[in-house]
Image 1 (cartoon, rainbow, N blue to C red):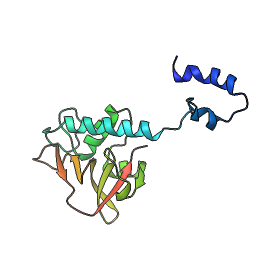
Image 2 (cartoon, rainbow, N blue to C red):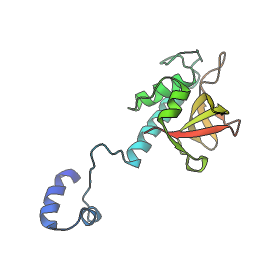
Image 3 (cartoon, rainbow, N blue to C red):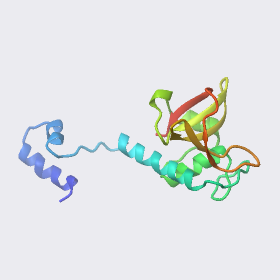
Length: 157
């Protein structure tokens, strides 16, 4: 019997017990339309794995995969494969993410490089101060250390 199938029988036995009490004894609570941290982490982990699988793919301005990428094309492609839709450019992607602090960053979050208020580059945080990204013309998708402090972080919702 799955956890979802147990909820009605647990509720019948629980009588007037609260949903929190029910959850504490092994039930589960589902809120439609509300993503859990666990599912967000799973999506980010999948996107990170997709980006890593593209190691060595050539950079091409405006390319969104599956064989060539620019920076935002790699993030768009990776999250699309993980089940989330992102807009096309780095700046648009920044505007649609939940902005987080450097201390809150986790593997799979997006790293936005900026000059003043202008976002000019994006990669996927891999942990340990590194990102997967498509750097520039003549280069390939690779894992690289973040080279500047002029970055902002965003979590895909």
